[in-house]
Length: 400
Ligand SMILES: Cc1cc2nc3c(=O)[nH]c(=O)nc-3n(C[C@H](O)[C@H](O)[C@H](O)COP(=O)(O)OP(=O)(O)OC[C@H]3O[C@@H](n4cnc5c(N)ncnc54)[C@H](O)[C@@H]3O)c2cc1C
Image 1 (tube, rainbow, N blue to C red):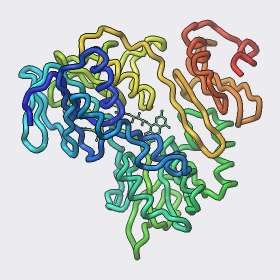
Image 2: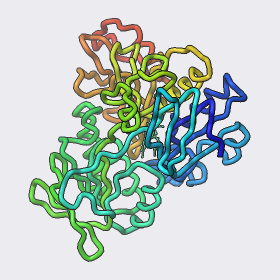
Image 3: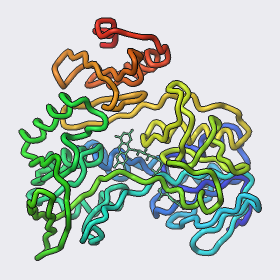
Image 4: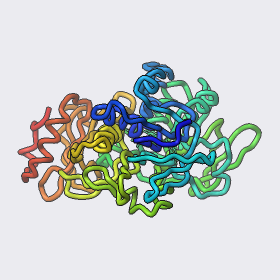
């Protein structure tokens, strides 16, 4: 294998894969090496909790590019391999097989790793900290129709996988510490209404309840909780958030603070080293603050832009990434600062099902959630960009 590349990409997720497009948009020649810890070639993660369970996609349809794409585009893939050392001065990177590569420009797109629970039994092999295709395959094997599952976590991953398992005939129990599902994002009324819907569909929801230990017993897993409850199931899935995968950057002495610090061109504090996607902490222009965003559109757009800038571009990242989710019949797209800690105003056409939730600070729209309303993300972006003060009556019917 070659030892020197014009471009090296660390991480074979969406941001890393999108960087290839960005590079090739400006430089058709420069050799690219992509080092990815997973043995799979880059694929999309959202279907792992949604379309693969709804029968809308098959595993072979979630890959980002056809296998031939890489060779045709002068990209060498080194999969199942972790980059373990980066020397930003010597401009080399070393992987866990001991192989070293030199680069002219490097992208760190290492995403995040699931936050592990620090509880007795929480490291049992059978507990699935849900993040990748291997986790989906393991879960599919264990969670056939009639199986039982305990889902720990009431955020995006926990709620989505609970809904999907329920739709596939699995008996689901949810346990999570917050008062209602997706409570960091949904205003209380909406969160509680969706939670009630989960209950109606047969999911046993235990909010404000945390696991205290796990154990394996007779082929089943047993979870005990703070409320002294005991649950038993065939499988336990944990969605407790992710930690940005910053080890490589830290080891290289790059600036890290809740993710790898980058400027608007996705440049890290190290020369010719860029970062993008879930791992990058970037200046979000329209919100006037730094953020790290763990969503699909951000990884896609930021990865591509980082690639283009590595290949000589000088575009700032001013994109306002949106995100999306589906919980049974409730689907939404959202943009901006979508945080339930802000003041919210919900303009419903159909209560807790169809309408727009505005997230406000001092009367200014900071974020918008479009619930079962489609193709309006750009309108929502404009409203946030304007930064004008609005009253609730101004907002009523503004986007519909
Ligand atoms: C189950 C699931 C469902 C989701 N659903 C949605 C959704 O509905 N809507 C939405 O907007 N977003 C969703 N997301 C989030 C979205 O998928 C992520 O934001 C996106 O995948 C981030 O891409 P990334 O490339 O930055 O990181 P990742 O996808 O995490 O990719 C990083 C890759 O780098 C590899 N890596 C890490 N360290 C090293 C190393 N040292 N050397 C080599 N390789 C390394 C990792 O193994 C991984 O393959 C979902 C995520 C998950 C897990």
